[in-house]
Image (cartoon, rainbow, N blue to C red; front, side, top):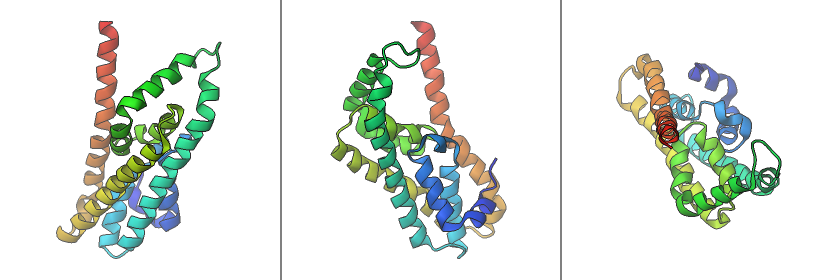
Amino acid sequence: MFNIPKLIAAIGYFGIGGIIFAESGLFFGFFLPGDSLLFTAGFLASQNLLNIWALLILTFVCAVLGDQVGYWFGRKAGPKIFTKEESIFFHKDHITRTQDYFAIHGKKTIILARFIPIIRTFAPIMAGVGNMEYSTFLSYNIIGGFGWTFGLTLAGYFLGSVIPDVDKYLLPIITVIIILSVLPAIKHFIVDGRRTKEK
């Protein structure tokens, strides 16, 4: 597990922004600890080790921009990848299904994906592949990015402000956040597995 406080101390604002940007829409960013990073950074801000307003603005902007990059990558590269006829993994029907999915569920997906590790990295890319209308994507990207960055960062900030010696409990709290953040993905995997067996 990442030692989040030491990581933040080592990378500073620039590193925090870079991690949030990468996890929000770059393929290689899916393993990065976005949820726990935001919460811990908020906690450190409550201890006057970071500026809370700089942190909120930085993470929000980087989250939105990261999703933008993911969306445009999917929009430009996706159709070329998914239209290779003889590929084992990619078929034309994949892009059709993606387009249908985002036409129906795209808005809530962009918002809810923010709170699910791995999914939040690939959701904007698939939104681009699915040719989701850009203005719609941008609106819900901003809403989701705001809720995710402000919500988790302020949670850490206020918890650090109101609970004496909360740093003693920081590791267990971060562990709980990580577990809670991956539960939806695990549930989705189990449900999909059951549905596949039933077919």
